[in-house]
Image 1 (cartoon, rainbow, N blue to C red):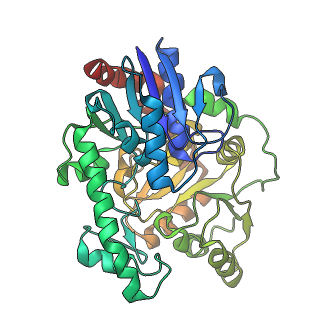
Image 2: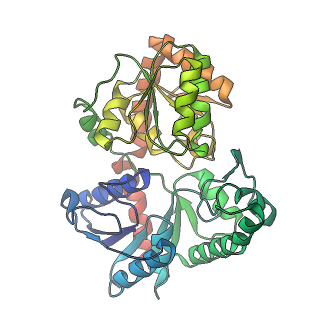
Length: 387
């Protein structure tokens, strides 16, 4: 089959969505399909030997990116098109053959303007006019009364995204948690296919030495330092665990300064490296005593956790969203309901080598469910239906 993957996010400069798109592209190519990528991310036009069309787009992303994608797709009537994120979905579904388009939903963009379902540090149970009066505060840089004027646009934006998804030939949720959310909002033709992580590639990349020094034993956090990722909880959780281990943080965000101040005030040894190259992330993960995952939002399906499975990294994680679709408590990780339990879990992992070994082995076994050979056939079923 001829398959075109379309995404505003793609390596080499990418987060989890971009690397998941790459993993899908490589898996499809290995299965014998003709795969190409269209993206607005900068980089080489032939990354991994795949044809990558990188669009240079000017203007406001919300309008310019979908238009650019739609224009680029004209004339590709023989291909199955698979949009990987929100703006690529809008562009792909703007054409006259939306029934040939699959869309993967990797976060909450069809139901939350901010894509996180987090407002003022707490979970939004449901989006609507009244909740929006809360969530614009602190996000729209105007006085409170003027911030509310953004609400009509926000509601229109979400309506347009959901109406676009209604035209898609298939909507692929990365977890059952996301799938349930989409169905509750009336999105049709929803099915779940998780993100792909190739365990062999992951282990091979992690085998090299990181480009920066690491302690012999350490706790690790990887991700954005934002409210939805539980960044405010990170240092208090480690402090209360009393593990006596330094905390290595790979990531940046609006809470970076607050995290550093908290670490100093609580006596936590913090090694903040900022954003790191993917190879270094995996190498740090493979060497970590334990991964700390304090995520507060309804986690769609964390790529960090999937890669940690493949590496056998012991994990202590908040049980939110699709995380329990990755980890089985006491088998491939420790799943906990709140920050206090997370501290206890981190302390257990730090002090119990046998537990770390058992969870690591369980994680490696579990990672097979997210390998290309397990998931590519499921994508092929969808593509054949759309072709």
